[in-house]
Length: 394
Image (cartoon, rainbow, N blue to C red; front, side, top):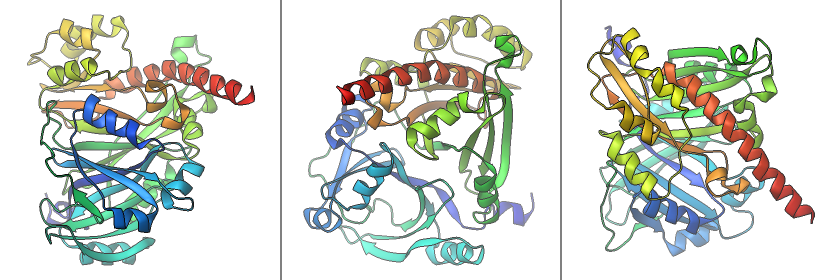
């Protein structure tokens, strides 16, 4: 591998750092993360900063990942403006870099649109936290670049005294972030030319074969990555025929624009994690029993001979499997927030849990199973939205 290849994007990215989620109901988010996901509440916006921003915020941290849930407390705040345009969703994706000035300089040279200039802050312990943000073609979503000392809290956040560290599900890091668009080309080109990312993987399929050559829908997906840090961004668009019938198009409509569809957490052992999450009330996309009937032959065809899990255990929990040449992964997808809470305002965003056993890909064999499962749930979402419209009109 050449030294240029090792430099990856040239931004000096270390890995994913955090993301910011804007929500209408902060208490609902607190219950979701602390009770259902077993992700501890580790910080909150100080009263002074909350008053300045016109927002309330809670920080949840687990492994090497953090999510800040933000909700408006005053009209005109950034969170209030977001919720005027979108349901609950990811507004900022944070990446940690080695040198903030270097990342800023490179992005400006490549034509990046800077939203906030490099800003230096310190947390309650005096730990440095420096950052800036850029606009993206991903609707209203921004990318934040962060240089910080270990354990430093985001600007304005104070630690919660007596907060307990726990991670029963053993979430470790953000594995990848997936976004949906009505057209991929502008974002993929921007990731290549401004971010310096390279194409990692792509797939294109359609379910028309299930409908005798007519009907069905499909998607095209391109994964871009920074080869130095390993950060991967998956990106989907709907395809013809039946372009508007695609669940990718349905996501963009429900989100009122392009946006982050899901965030994937990596775990070392997925079976106990999913058992815990189901017990805590998390719902996952359904997987047809026929998927597991075909699994042994599919793994044999893909030359995966070292598979250790019992198919019955995976079927009971709805966990998907894919791999090749004795490298495989196990993954499962939660239902979207709007279906979990039967509230369209909770949005079409969802989480994935993934365990990698040597495989570095995205479960190409599972893409279709996931796509079809989301399409089935899309019908449920349409029912929820119809009920909301009917209630508003009564």
